Length: 135
View 1 (cartoon, rainbow, N blue to C red):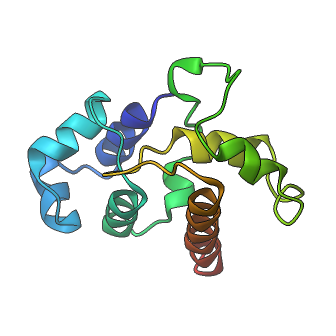
View 2 (cartoon, rainbow, N blue to C red):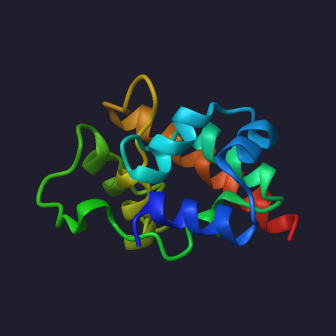
View 3 (cartoon, rainbow, N blue to C red):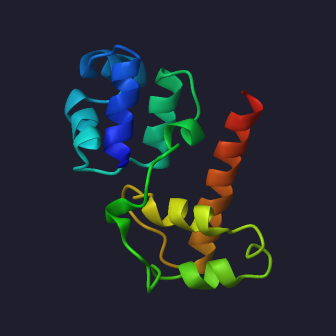
């Protein structure tokens, strides 16, 4: 299932309109619509707003979300391979983490070096683990 399909399904299960979700999440109706149609990929911050509106976690929003376009990565984004081969993090980065990190479209700027990938990973790990503690 694509991320947009998953987001639409959750919204429908919660019996909300895009306008309702817009008010709860503080996001515009057109942007939410674009997310559900797969026109844009939301940032982590945006996913946090949507998760909060549903009183759930980002991790639960991403359940059953498949890799974008089912691509097999033969090359990684710039700096990503250095990050996943770093001995400090390589043992933590399984295929699920690789998929999650690569599939997230960061608004404004995608990480372009090892340090930026580490920062994104640590931030995402913190967000997801804090959501698990609240479950």
